[in-house]
Image (cartoon, rainbow, N blue to C red; front, top):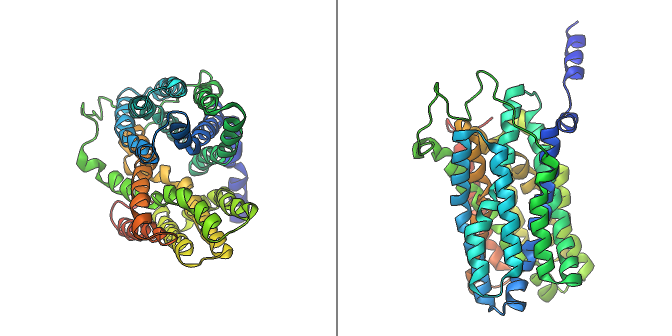
Amino acid sequence: MLPELAAADVAATPSAARTVWNSPLYRGATAALFLSGLGTSAAAPQITLFLVDDLHVSLTTAGLYYLTNITAPIAGYLIGARSDRTGRRLGFFRLCALAGFLGWCAMAAANQLWMPFVISALVLAFAGAAGSQLFAAVHDDLQATASPVGDGVVSIVRMALTAGWIVGPVAGSLLATAAGPRVMLVATGVCTLAQIVPMGFSRARPRRPGAPSTVASEAQPERPGGPGLRVMLPLLTFTVLYVFVYAGEPIKYGYLTIYMHNDLHLPTAVSGAVIGIQPLIELILMPVAVVVARRIGMMPLMVLGAALGVGANLCFALTGNAAGMFAGQILMGGVWGVFAALGIIVAQRLLPQAVATASAIFMSSPAIASALGGLTGSVGVDLLGLPHVFLAPALYGLIATGGIAVMSRSRHAVS
């Protein structure tokens, strides 16, 4: 009798994919994040070319542009803290999307050296908080409905952002070649604003009784300044470790293609296949990571993910052949299959009383990692040369692996 009851329970449990499809909020968030990834990734590889070719900025000065990303965590925290106090997740999402549209259009119209730097630091920093508000709204809804497939829903929504990053660089390159970089930047702004469309007039559902409070209330008052530093320390520690994991990505995208072309003399088709295999592996492994995490826990799986990043960068630094490049990218696909699927979930669980703040802080970490990786790559390539510059992100990954291992054994471990 028990096996029949268990089978009936499994049959009655909706799949994560069906849950996403049946919910206007989840479905809209999935489409919106795809558009976000598409627009952002279309512009990311073209910004330096725009600065150098159109504004006649030196390569050294153009590299400093990425340091403007350090304002993103501040903007994200301000938006997230306000969202946690008011509960207006989707209202702030729409405002951030509008800021992104205005910022990218202003970037396209820039004709002075200082303009892209100021626009990025003061306007586009707020645009990056749009995605974190969507994840906070999805979290609130999952809490309100007590969904048994919540982790799977978050993973699918997150996969849409990854899918946008797969398509975007190619689309951005083609558009910039055909119509010019300024048109491409306007198109990025349109994609950012278009995030609002699939969300329609959706509203986040109120939290279910007994769930961790994500909005200040009389029963659980929130201090005017938001969560205290002590409460946020586990989240901040995890975010810093994630920055170390992520810091290898700007180094890889900055130098791996050059290394394969100039030193290994690989055909263009082969080097393109090397770059393209990572997101494919990532998409395949993201749903697998959710299933495995249910068995062994999220933090132990992230220890493995960070260790894969160490192995990937050692492949880039030490193998010196096409097989090693493919092996490194496959391992890197494993890294992001784990962290892309589970990172936002862990961040929210480390600060359950303020999930918008948690989401904003965590999702701003790639901006910090981009600045760290850009600086490391610039210094490292002079000191170590190619391919040994990849030993630096391998060291970062080793630090992250040890740090996450310590967290997985502490009272802050997330199951």
